[in-house]
Length: 486
Image 1 (cartoon, rainbow, N blue to C red):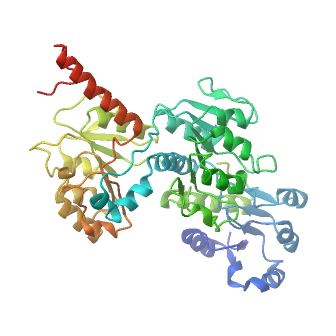
Image 2: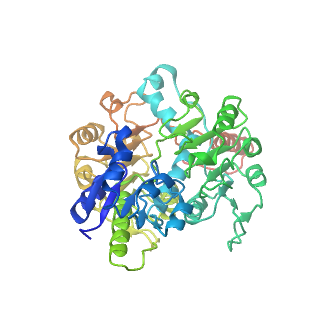
């Protein structure tokens, strides 16, 4: 493949660039000043037989016309809306993308954005870091994701992966697609307005084309309503951005989680101050695993083309270890299974769950996990159950999640491990001396901190209050208590 001249339109992935440079004759478009790029293309036109674009910078008709030797466009993305397909067809230029390998990551982010928007996780993190938990008390109640009606716009690879994950949260699934699919447990709606009117969370997961541009317009947003949340992990142009902004400002839409925008990298400044949106910079597929797999797929397609072979058409989940397989631990296990995560656990005794791997010690569990979730009750035996030895076993790529109690974790050892890079990251809802959070954590970018909000949704707090009232009524009436502990 060393004779294949490849134009890389922008620096998009270091591994891909390195491999293209090693295997091909590589031309880097960005090395030429922006006002001299036409000259650069003319100078190398006869040598460039392949172009590698990506989501932010594509291949238009002018570039195709400027490259008479062009044979293949191999996009470092699944979306090809920035490639002029008509011009490619007219010239007989082959076009490939990177489907499948990014499906899991994008679907993960869709669910993550929905949870972050509904539970206000970024806002809660800022609340802790700003010292407001100490000065102003508990964070506001939010609303849960579990059980929400999820509508999916586009039931392709990514849409189906989102549906699978949302089902694990007991979410009823409905969808709109060009035609009804053979998934009888998902409800089909023939138009987007009806879909939006019958869901709490609307996820945009369709491909972008002239028919789907601004498919989420004012009518759809109004149908979704003031309690609804819009999640966009597809393309920015799917959503009429000015209408979205006005709906959020006027409270006609409850919230949004956005990975994509119409004019990237320029996100509308009006969104920056809103506390009912979560914004991320088009990172749906930006994990080390997926970017490597995407790069390999680009390279394999170029290799297949150079050898005149058929082009390829086209994550495994993280190993999750759970300390304590009680009600909450089992609920965590069921949810992460939908993300294709193998589940391991440590408990006083082995449980009757043959699909999960049992470890008799927490150190062994940590050594065999990528993510360690603390979900056991706190007692004299589980205090500091996550100590330095456990964290060392979890390692510099491991992530610790504590939704149990603060004293489950040796906080001083955890802070030191995070600072030293011996622990990869942490997500913490609980702390040893609440509401006092170790100040060393507040400046770290590898931790997420929330102010003990695990049960702080309107739905759960109402259910908890009803249970307190039920226990008091049962006591007064001389009946068995509903949830007697002592």
